[in-house]
Image (cartoon, rainbow, N blue to C red; front, side, top):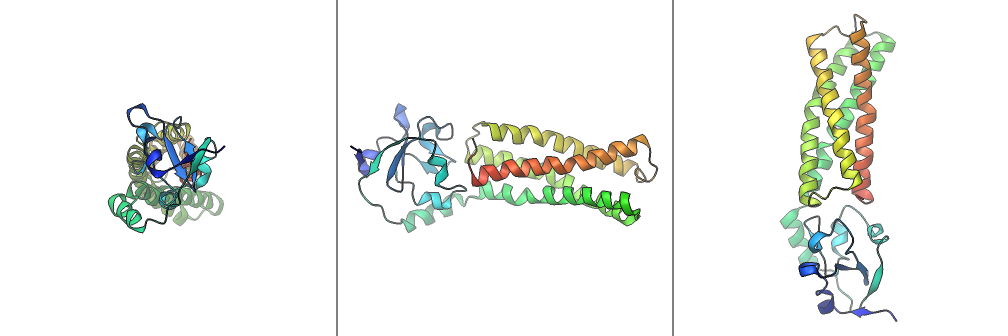
Length: 234
């Protein structure tokens, strides 16, 4: 027989003082005790255990699929209405800005660095110097935007996910290192040697390859960012 939990009973499983971590969603009660993202009964510094989280999921960057890997231990015995006041208070308090700032800033290095790679290829194919100059300017903006995006991502990770190190976060952090290093090296080389692609030296090919490498790097970072936002950060 399925165990029925009242709201008062559910409050006992809030993860505090060694208590199990139970969360209700659509009247099903899930045991999230083993989740590394629900330490001490708190997730993303916003969601709390021991309550009905049906409404709060509407304001989360993921859906109900995050509960699929955890076991159902019972059902919520009473229906809970849409708590508009509670929702507004949470939005006003957190605003979700810890995650949204990174989502906004991450688009700049991705688009700018991919554009720089495309413009350099056009220069190599067509030979019009205007493409190379435009690539330099977009590369400069992309490189400048990269550390801002990385820092906002680290801040969002610390605030929203309490700095819990999962495989996806580890990969994003590790991949961000070559993004910053290669980006700044390319910018320095092009600034010191404006004709680096014109002279066709060994350094020219090194510079070209490094700029082109920035595209798969930002695509990979964007892919893992999408998994965190729309799937689950495990």
